[in-house]
Length: 68
Image (cartoon, rainbow, N blue to C red; front, side, top):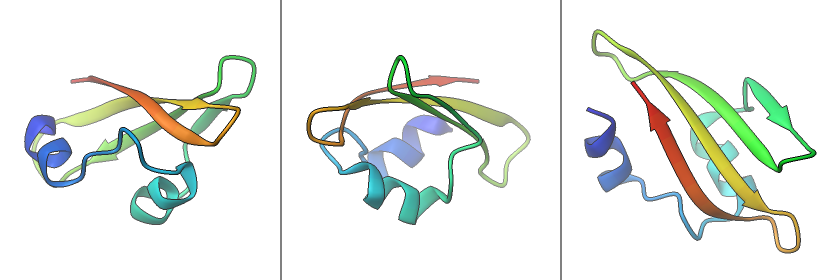
């Protein structure tokens, strides 16, 4: 299910401000590791935990990891 979401909304290469416009404010942020975490309910039966790593030099997403 999360694959469908990421296929429609690729986050890698996006500015973190644009990701926050799409998803809202992150549920958690680890500034030391530059990781924002969202807990997403995409309207199905599962809640997704998504970690987005942001390059601190340019505020661009360089990786996304989803746990379902």
